[in-house]
Every structure is written in C-alpha cells, then in structure tokens.
Image (tube, rainbow, N blue to C red; front, side, top):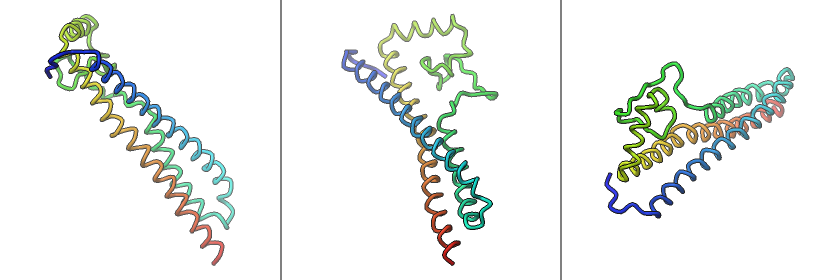
Length: 173
C-alpha cells in the first residue's frame, strides 16, 4: 500500500471507521443480550406449562426453537479468542495484525516493540496496518456476530410462528 500524502483527513476517516465498527459490535452484543433474555424468560415460562396437555405440542416446538435461539445468541457474545488450538503468530505471518491482542500475545515484547516501531516510522506501513485491522474487524463482525444474531432472530420468530398454529390446531380440533 502506498499513500502519496498522509494527511489528517485520512487519519480521521480511519478513526471514524474503527469507531463505527466498535458501535456495530456493541449493537450486535446488545441485540444478542435482548434475544437471550427474552428467550430465557419464555423458556422458563413455557416449561412450567409443558405438562398441560393443551399446550404440550406447541411448547415442545417452542422450547426447541428457543434453545437454538439461546445457543445462537450466546455464540454472538462469546469472544472468539483461540483457546486450546491457539494459532501462534510471528510478526512475519501474513495474517498477523500488530493491533489485535490475539495475534501478538505470544510474541516477545522486544520483538513486538521493534516491529511496531518500524511500522510507526513508515507512514505507508502504518496506514496498511490500520486498513488491515479495519478489514479484519469488519469480516469478523459479518462472519461471526451478525451471522449468529440474524440466525438467532430467525429461529426466535420461526418458533413463535410455528408454535402458535400448532397450539390452535391442537385445541380447536
């Protein structure tokens, strides 16, 4: 990446884009927490009525959808930090990002500081690192948080829609 003339407008654009990504991540977490709370409350209430034969079929269907919804909401808010299968990066790895803590956690401080110093003294490389960080954060949001939150809402509403006619069919026929 080559930036012909580093200037304040570029810095502002990158800063604003990163702040927007943080806001989008917070929005996804908030939506997931709302979905998790509503689904948990409905699950608790539903389970108290499962023994009533008038509600059994509809509640079993609803409970199944609510459990999937809860799982998807949890997948949205659970951090995706590598656990036991942690991928160790070096500063030379093509996927390494010096701005993401999950990537530099295994790199010795001296090596990390030296690499960051080189980056900060090269405006082209500084911009490249920031652009890469923005890109990776956006991809993470779409492929992880928003994928799960969308699926969670779809399962939640599908569960409500499917269980309602089952209830009416069971009680009107």
